[in-house]
Amino acid sequence: MTRRMLLQAAAAVPRSPYVNWSWDKWREITDAAPINLTTDQTGQAALSALVQPGMKALDWRNRRAELRRVIGLYAGEPPLAKPPLDVRMDGEERIEGGVIRRRVRFQSEPGELIPGYLFLPSALRGKTPAILCPHQTTQLAKDEPAGLRGNPRLPMAIALAKRGYVTLTYDAVCFGERHDTASGHYGDSIPFYRRHPRWSIMGKIAWDLSRAVDFLEQQSFVDSACIASIGHSHGGYTTWFSMAMDERIGCGVSSCGFDTFRHDGNPYRWSHATALLPRLGFHVVNPAINLRNYSGVPDSGVVDIPFDMHWVLALIAPRPLMLTAADDDHVFPNSGWSTRQAEARLLPLYEMLGDSRRLASYYFRGGHAFPPEAEQRAFAFIDRWLRPRK
Picture 1 (cartoon, rainbow, N blue to C red):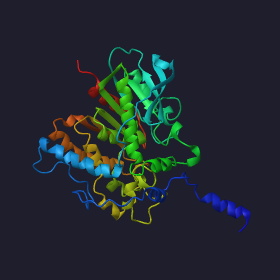
Picture 2: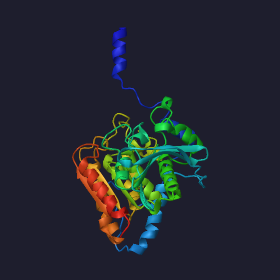
Picture 3: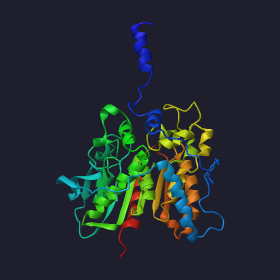
Picture 4: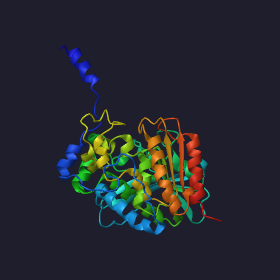
């Protein structure tokens, strides 16, 4: 084979974005074992019912505790205590629309500062509702919701500050200033798992958003009873997973950020293609599933997972939640159907708990995006539930 042919062959093989991260390396670090558990979801290809026959609202407390216990087995064990926030303010400037942008940092774990941008509306008076704006899967990280770089449809932090809200966006773990470029996609999770072998990146994401809530509650101008979260893609599942773990987040919108294992076909995206919930990797049994071929690939091992993502959404009820999904989403190719199925399971729960209007959805064609109509509906939903009642 000539040198030219060798170069052409090498070019034909796509470079993996991963350098340090792999599921096998996680297993080596943690010595983790499969979770053997049977629930009413185990063995079922369809999503299980959330409301059982004869169930009353008073029964939900025990059912909810069991759902959270099961999810917690996969999300892992967070630290026992939170350190002081150790807030740093690194300057501010007035930008378009009279909005003030402050560069801030606050402590998540001892010695670990989260960098972010805090936006204050021009007409800030008294206690004001606040909104967290976690970013999508991009190394631009907080700069995109802040409107500094990236997709011009996703500067949510600025747009919502112009509507009169205090907003906060920050770098998620493994992204932005919290990413080592030499480690590749999710490579930063390897040192994380060395420190926290019994936790998960998804659990850490929820922990960090909870620390962001702690930060907002410390601000004298924030109404701590009115805190919401909205995000696209990675920011979408950051929102709903964090809401499930922290009841202080009173309202949420997920844009193109929801899917279930069973409708996606397998949990590979959560355990191998990302480092989010690696314990799910024990349920990947089809050898045809790999980094290039996992979206929508059916795997019989998925039915043995003792929960699905609609259980996580159930932990949010009855707080207001809106899900938007595209029927032609290339990232979550079955998310339109998946979200519809989850919504069908959630609706009886919201009805039982008192207000089905608190659960909303919007389906569209337009790819993995946050189109103007979705934005209009999402912001109106937040206005409806977050604005103080007169």
